[in-house]
Length: 268
Image (cartoon, rainbow, N blue to C red; front, top):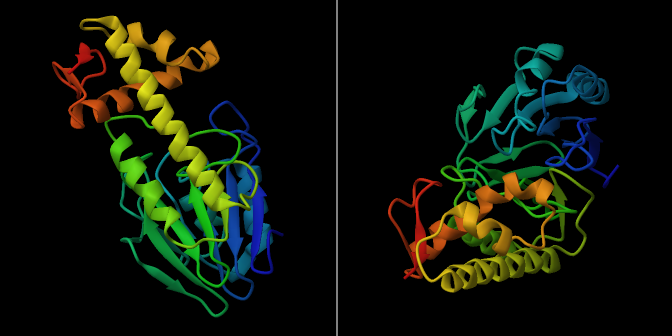
């Protein structure tokens, strides 16, 4: 139990990208919403169904990445056909009963859950704010224990910065992330994220300047991410590309085609 209204079940899918595993949250008692059923992993879905049973009325997802949304329909099959599956949009095999926009409210007997559109990590990313507790279910927008990968073309670094600032202004008291433990000082965590991204952006810009001419992402990666385990460099490539796109948009860099990771980049 995280609070009087919230329970967490962590999927046994630990890994480099998932940390201890994907967190699924059950909100409410008489009427329950499941947030992020996770992958289609039978033992995890069985545990969710056993915990909520016939009281589950809604299944919602933060976004359509493979460790968050594929369990939605298999979970419904374990429950009842009238359980509503909700998300920002149909994509990547996820087919909700309804697409919900920013500000959509689930008004249950014991709680109010409001969707907050937070693109950046994914264009279809939603956080969910439990109004009664000012608790934000952040999916992959904010995690505990690591930073978030921003992977173009769906991921966008400038949009991610804006979404972090949006969440900072919501007045949340805690953050329940998609991976990792509860964040009890949300402003400090968001500021940590913003500062990390700003520092990385400046490091990328400095690497571009030092190159003195056109370079590739592969040229920049070992310099701009020299503090990151090489085992993570394949993943870091995506965020480096996103930082470079932002530098181009800000007029600090140029590229033949910023939409292609293989293009040549240089200081403006």
